[in-house]
Length: 260
Length: 163
Image (cartoon, rainbow over all chains, first blue to last red; front, side, top):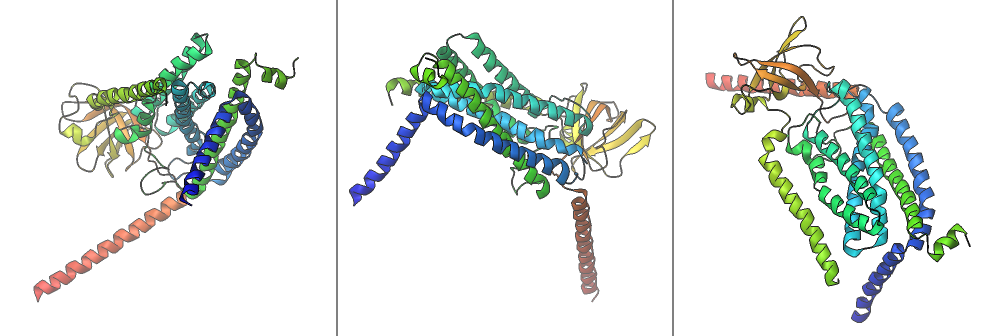
């Protein structure tokens, strides 16, 4: 009896490992991603429509900011995704750096332009919000400055990646850069709590629960999930393309693409 | 785990923790510069630069706003200390009594802060105006009830003292 119990987790673990190894195989990933992308994409589109409708039509105006606060339905999901994409990029880079798994390198590289776009979107929408509410497009407080540094980290990653011809060498160099930049993530997140900033403190994740009325919070969360799904769909599209590019000389690519 | 992988793992962990420590120490050393503004208490204690441009932030004290054409006089407070501010120009829409603001400028000889820019800081609470009004009414009722209770107790104490 005891023996059998010991055997079960071992096989489960082994099955999990086999799955990981299969996932890391380019062909399996290519096919799995191909099946997942439409699901992620359509779910993102539906949630985006629902979130925008809820946020721009159904949600009431704010007691202080009137209708101008509605930019949070873009600004907050974009800002959160700018951090999430970086953590995903650095995490995949870390796996690629230590275990030299090609697929992890591919995923890390696919995250960079998406994360940079989310960061730029967060900075631009924040700037448009800042002028009517604060009275300035830009201030050099800790939150805004650290988010700008994040944009430069993404741009540096992309530039470094473009500067190195060999894909494997480029992956190693960019992973190190991504890991160096990880330090900026907690700084951005906690900047509004550690230092006096003009940017307001956290609304959703804080002690005592979110300080936002429910009919504003629901569309906000819909938008957050929509942005996340959109990110996964786009990341998989990019990763899939790069897998094809990298494996261009292998038999399975010729089989998939249908060339002799 | 192969020795090679372990070496790379240790390298990655050391890299992240080393840079984390360096940045944490740096941020700690520069912590004064990382504050976007000084509080009125810091200004009162002389932490703010005397002959330099700096920013002061706090709440606009109720009943302190006096307008004189384009020039506005008001007092910013952190509930402990306060700083009188004078500003000439257009104020942001959110500027009102009780609102958090950040002013940039310098102190003049008489201790008044001459601002060149006033920014409004909005809070992290979002709610519809009806809810805000209801909350305010409830708050006022509560305060009134507390005052009534206090008066009652005072009257009772006075009664007890008289007897």
